Amino acid sequence: MPSSSCGIAVEPALVKAVLPGGDSLTSATQKPNGGTVRCNLYVDSKLVLSLAQAWWSEGHTTAAVAPAYPGTKDGTMSEDERFIHSGEAGVGRTVSSCKVARHPEQDLYVAVETRESGVDDPDAIEKLLVAYTKAVEGSAACR
Image 1 (cartoon, rainbow, N blue to C red):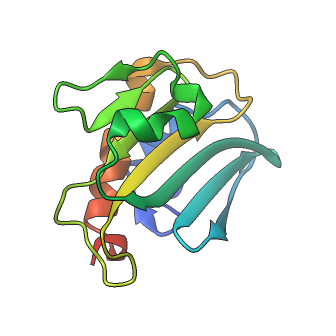
Image 2 (cartoon, rainbow, N blue to C red):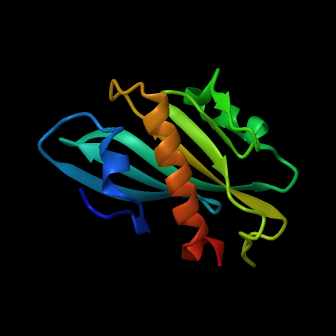
């Protein structure tokens, strides 16, 4: 397990906990639009996990962003309403100080989505989501 996923440092054990078994792990970065960066992880060439950073207009809430990530349906909301997660996916809002000039009046959200991996582990998804969100907050994405 690498110590970073597409340039975002996160504890390898947290990523491994939401991956199926296999022989090889590869990753690829996608930028489907001007406000999203997606890190896709593949086990044995099969897409199994997507870690995304997406800018949304200010004023959205985690509950409003979550439906864009179907795996969060019927998910559990954190007390502070920054995170929502299920056993397959989660969405987290970065801290309000995460601002960059190229995305004025927008907030950065993070999404963790399993993809046909057979993983359904709410605790593992929550731990990875919180850790990945904090790692993004400390990265160049928030400066």
